[in-house]
Length: 154
Image (cartoon, rainbow, N blue to C red; front, side, top):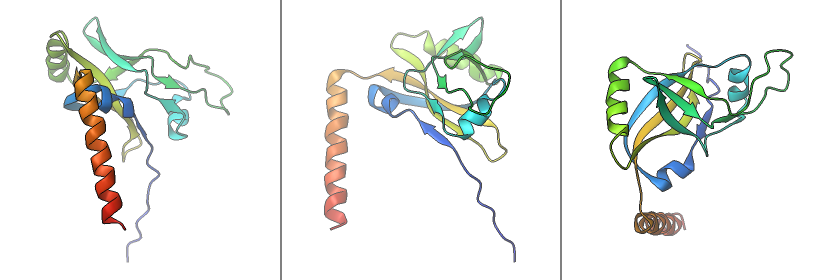
């Protein structure tokens, strides 16, 4: 009889992204971290609300992503909102860079998670901004779904 060990999975969502943008395509990217940043992420001390992605010299970087300083770290202090490089293959980078230069498109981080192997991954999405009437439609849809669930579970 094989006993299954359940791993602790960390998932940090950017709830604002799906409200502000239409998410077109999603990609999973690795991240270059330093020092004890991975321990802070495993503790759930990260925030994606103000984060965005941009290209600098043909490389994709995530800006304004907040990773809190690890409490028990004795050395290797890092800045909480420093720019971090994302790791994608060249084909995906070229495709994303071409699309992000088009009017109305941007790249937003949607989910920060730890995969099965213990690597920190960032799910990014090519997104197009919503207008105010699209946002109202999203709110209306969310409210109707909530009402349907309330009626279903009574």
